Image 1 (cartoon, rainbow, N blue to C red):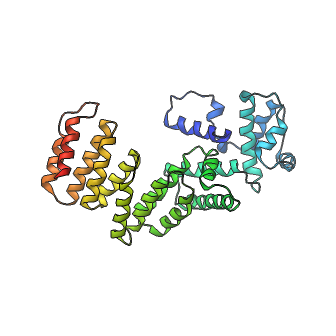
Image 2 (tube, rainbow, N blue to C red; image 1 turned 90 degrees about the vertical axis):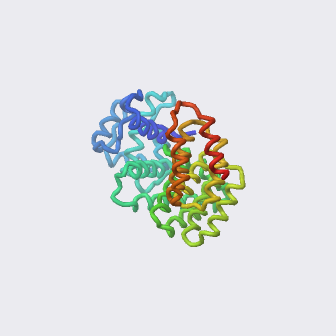
Image 3 (cartoon, helix red, strand yellow; image 1 turned 135 degrees about the vertical axis):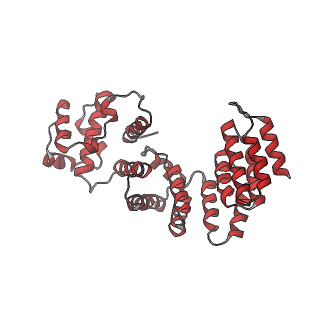
Length: 316
C-alpha cells in the first residue's frame, strides 16, 4: 500500500496529466517551490510555531518526519487535518535535516528525479544515475541483512509514486538504445536480482548480449520465446525484433503474440511492425502484402480476417 507522501506525489503526477482531476489545492501543491518562511507560516493554524532553530532542535528526538508528526499532532487528528500538516513537516525535514535520510525522504527524492527525467528537464543523466546507485545500495544493504530480494523491491515501491520496477526496466532499455552497454550491464546485474518479474530483465540481458555475441543473443531470445510470456513483454520483444531480429526469431515472436492480442490497436501495431521488418530486409513484395492489410477498412474490434491473413503470410 502506498505510503502517505508517495500517495500525494502520485496524485500530483496524475493531475499534471489530467487537469480535470478534482482534488484540494493543498493536495496538489508542490511544496518544494515555496520559500521556507511560507512553510513555517502555514504551520500556525495547527497551533505549531517553529523557526529553523526550533525545528532542528525539536526534531533531534525523532528519526523520521513521520515520527515528528506523531509527536506534534493530537491523537484524534483526522486525515483532513493531519495530511496537510504532515506534508509541511515533511518538506521542512527534507530541507533542514538532510543528515537523517528516512526511506520516505529518499524515495521522495527518487520520485522527484524520475519525474524530471521523464519530462526531459535534466541537463544530463548524472542526477538519475546517482539516485539509482543509492537505491541499489539500499537494496543490497537489506539483502545483506537477510531480507528476500523481491520483498525488498515491493516494500520500497510502497514509498514511491512511480512504478519503480517499470522505471528500472524502461530506463535500462533506453540506456541500451543509446548504445551504452557498460552502464546497461551494471543496471541489469544490479537490479535483476530484485525484480518481481525477472523475465523482463532476462530480455534486457539478451539485448545486452547482442552487443558482443549475436548468436548467443538469438539463442537467449529463443529460450525466452519457448516459455510462457505475457502479452506486454511479447509486444516489447516484437518491437525490438522488428528492428534487430533474424527472420525466424521475429516470426516466432509474432506468432506467439497474435493469439493474445486484445484490441484492434494492438493488432495494427503488430502489422505495422511486420511491415517495417520486411522493409528492413528489403523484401518489397512481402512489405506490400502486409501494407495491404493495413489499408483495409477498420473498426474498433479485432478483424479476424486481418489476423488470419497475417498468420498466413508468416507461415510462408
